[in-house]
Image 1 (cartoon, rainbow over the protein chains, first blue to last red):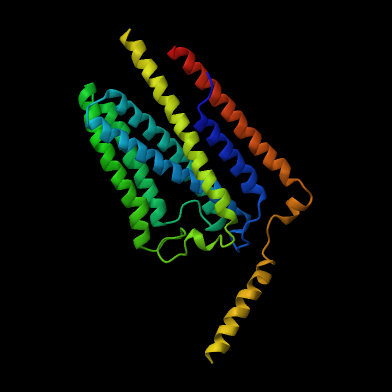
Image 2 (cartoon, rainbow over the protein chains, first blue to last red):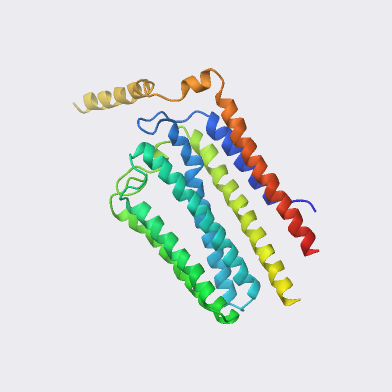
Length: 220
Length: 65
């Protein structure tokens, strides 16, 4: 069977972002130097994680509106892929921080918010696995998933902006829009975000399909 | 006085890119052409992962049928 068009598009966009992201000129800034290119790789991880969690929450809401079990499985697959992407975002961020801020972990509200967010989603999986009854498991975890998404927005989207943060666009720091006045970076960054969202959605979709197969096998 | 300050500010913005030129970037890596090797390696790894993902996709397809 042919691959779906969006999977091919996602792969091509990420491939483009790797090649163009490493070769195209970037603003020359002190301390950051060439590491500004991490924007195409590290930041895109968090963008796609947030979108995956959003899709997961939408699936949870749609589950609660009709109790279609497939929606619950989709929400779980999307959230677990989102967690995986978040781990990548966290580790790449730690490497970047070591060489620009001087430590793998600094006491930055965005970093701590991201850590809390990951713990919140970890609790989602623990909650799922701790309920034996399938129906109540799906219902309780769907409701928790909605709460988890709201908490994530608060911890990585709202709170860091209210205090001092080393991240661009937070606490008086200029946003990343200030760095790419030549808009060269935008031409790589936005395709990279879309590409990674599509690729990670593909991974989540595979996870969901395998899960469905497992359940079918159990019911045989 | 106002125009004097604005002239100075204007000059700063003109001169700033010249200062920025002194910041060290990976120019050497690009000038001898070897950066393309790195790009090729990373692109290769990504393509490899995608091929692997594609094959999992095919296998799941087969199981679903």
